[in-house]
Image (tube, rainbow, N blue to C red; front, side, top):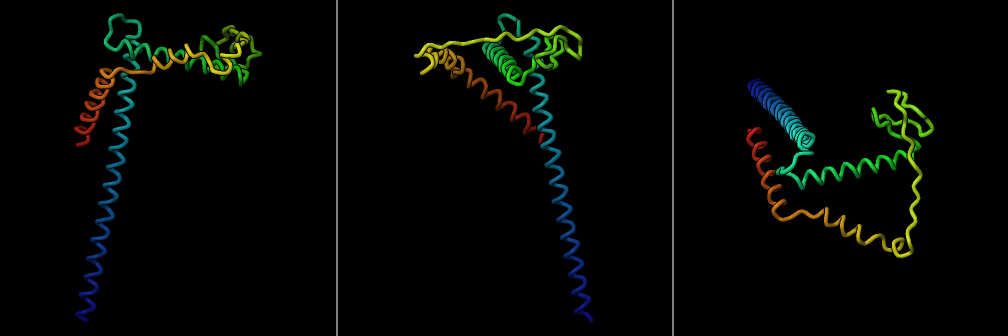
Length: 172
């Protein structure tokens, strides 16, 4: 009988240990999930701060982030043009008052009632050389806009390192 009692005690002990380890793993997974959610929340706040800063200071003169502000403006303008082109393909036009998309046949916005500005049909005629190779001057200008100086990269790297350090401190 003593053998069965010891065997029973061992089984109970092992099952308690296994239960505790499973609970610990579950708690650890929950904590990691919460930490990831907090990191995502912090990154979202950083993005919102950057967006707010841009909106507040986009028209300022002599600003520290002038080059970056210009790149954001150009990207937003380009995005707006792409959205306009997508709207033409889908047969929609965006209301300038409320940004709602309406069918191109509509004269007024059904959301706010504003008169819709109809897109004008644009025709592009490239000469043979441009059609074959594209506009080289525009391509070179675009490539120059994309380049970032070594100093800018190093400043961005320092900013990223600071953010990562702050996040690492918050995790602990």
